[in-house]
Length: 242
Figure (cartoon, helix red, strand yellow):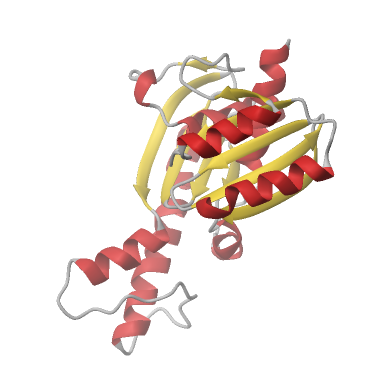
């Protein structure tokens, strides 16, 4: 069994895989990491290996406690991956994007795949049917857009995420919801449509924390999978065992 850990900007996801099957998943804030880790140690005695992808770092003590229990592999740009990386600055490529593309390479071989990760940022990553990764795009996520409206203006409030009830906002809050959420939806649909002009047989994957909020409002056909990054990390760990 494998323990997979994704350390994001705000949350930590921990998942246990039995080969390719997800057996356990829990999301926590960073200060609760060790309590969740201890829970996993008690529940699953057959875990031998762990892989960690870290955008926001764990503390040295948290990492040392993880190493006390398992052999830990840390995903970097030097880790062996199941695709050919054509990114011109591979050292700057986020490990979260590496994991997503790895999952696409193994789950959708010989297909053109666009992976959209709707989290703190919205990332777009393209893998060709020749198994070559070229890059994509990075844009502000939904929460970041709400926060920017509040921070960079004098009077706009900080709102919680909400589906706009109508296109034309008739007050400040509804106008902000329409601008943020519809703006993201139009952006994503626009990216997908532009890619499809060149790659007609495109497979589109939507993942990330806001994936389920967005998926039913998008016009294009997509596959929503909130565990895509975790599955990618597990694939990479297995790939490096061979």
